[in-house]
Image (cartoon, rainbow, N blue to C red):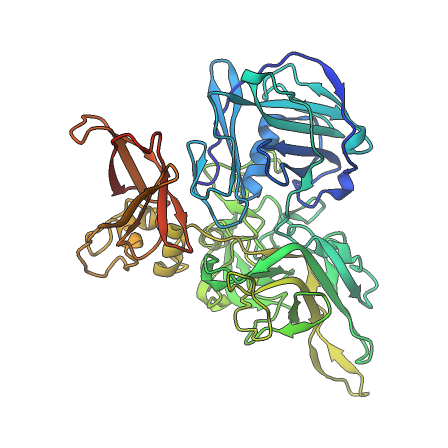
Length: 574
């Protein structure tokens, strides 16, 4: 349950105030969503005495002003850690809930709650609401003059240079809705800064092209949507690593703004992804080359990947570098896909006549590392893009095998820097060294998956994983059990067994009920709890989702009154 996005209305009176807080400018933003020349800063303040109390994202676009509804929706769709609920009524749209996965552990958000008690949630709808303000073209956050929006979020048209500020306030105490603290930059899953770089390329030599998310669309002639047969090639999109002499190494060293972990919740065991501009060979069915308006069904994939090899090293401090055992070469397999292929919901604003491309893909979702280009020989480009199943592709890397990497207090290895360099290939006839000439578009931290999603990646092949008629929670496997039951007991869909669901170690402490289950896997994304004060009650509340502690393997739920008699029912459900 990633984002619950509906639509609504919020109305506030108009007033002005000035707050001197602390310097924070557009240049301090780490995570930018969208593309274009217009810029806006989006600040979310949970106002819950946590540190930091607020986070800031950047938003880019071209053309007319965008509504707050549209911008919040796009940011929540792009950032796997941000969750937003916007409800709709006859009055319009209203901002009901915003949650943030603080620990980046694929928490499950529902009903204004999270399965992780550390996450930030707007979970007090009876006493709190999201107050929204804006400032126009301030030099910095501390120099802003804030004004209340006087319309609902559908009518809050954010212009170039706007600072949008949403604060969760207690309306019963007449709490101030204007900013009280300077925001922190929301962490970006992509490379944030260049530690150092060197190339002998005459063009494609701006190292900052390797930062941010990978290219999704090339807005120039013969450009269009980036896909496995139409790779990124714009001069403003790639960094070419060209080397002519052995004594003068060429490379790019990229820094993340956070630690990238060897996380057991990462799909396929991959920890980060490198994007280049490799592409697959193809043959057109009536078309000699791919163009923006080409139908992806008219191109058939050949099992050859056109790539330029690059070596990848990692570091924790930017000084000591380590190779990754048995690592693949970067700027190779798998080619980047910028948008999902979905003829039922094409994005009409992408380009005139678009009938195929829908939402942007997820660059933090890797493909299986066992795949090769031969696995999709002789299928159409349309079929291949479906099989990406929302992934943007790229070359994935697993840091678990690097023995010299330190681990944190939880035992997880981590890195903060990635260095990419060309591969020595041979000497020419005159004795000069020849190196590969890779191009780098981006690096991305792999996002962890919820338990059920991990079970799907484990039990369904790449060719089948995108088929919802096979992988949906409620689908029944060969063993007669629904997928969500098989996932909870860590069984394959074809493995015969008799589910035995029991509760152990039940206790009440500090206003919470704690318990363990016989389930083999954590399954907070499929476990539901019903509660009532009478065992024979006709109606039970079934909307409670437990929190899960991976360290103790305990589930917990909040109690309205720890001393009152309460009965609980647990069940697995879709």
